[in-house]
Length: 160
Image 1 (cartoon, rainbow, N blue to C red):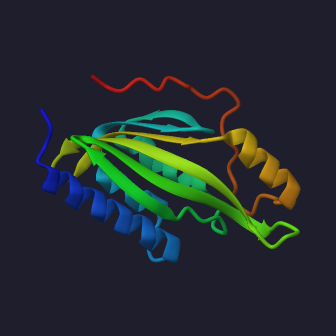
Image 2: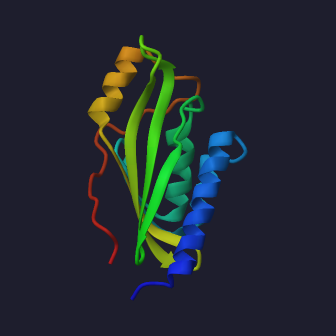
């Protein structure tokens, strides 16, 4: 059974507003954890599966260190019952010879659990394109950068 559309929409609006605050430098990535249940399952294309709110906070801190010059603007969101899609871009520093940005297409799928919280997020983007852009741009990690694990858990199953 789905939650009321207005409730889901209000949470998505607040989630997107916080992401905009993060973009503006007025909030941190760890603030995003407030939108998730204690038993959250979160999947990142580089870091893999993260389970639990404590682990999510640590992941958001570790994975975003040294990426403060990257941007992740949201393009749109869509809602179908408790299922949400947020379309965003990953913009890495620098510009191509033609002046265009190093920009990748990203999508997050989320499951709304009620009470202003999501129980699941899966972030998707083409890591081959990301790595090609990083190589072409000559990007180098900034201080504090944490590399993803060598063998992340790729289990994308949703909690039951």
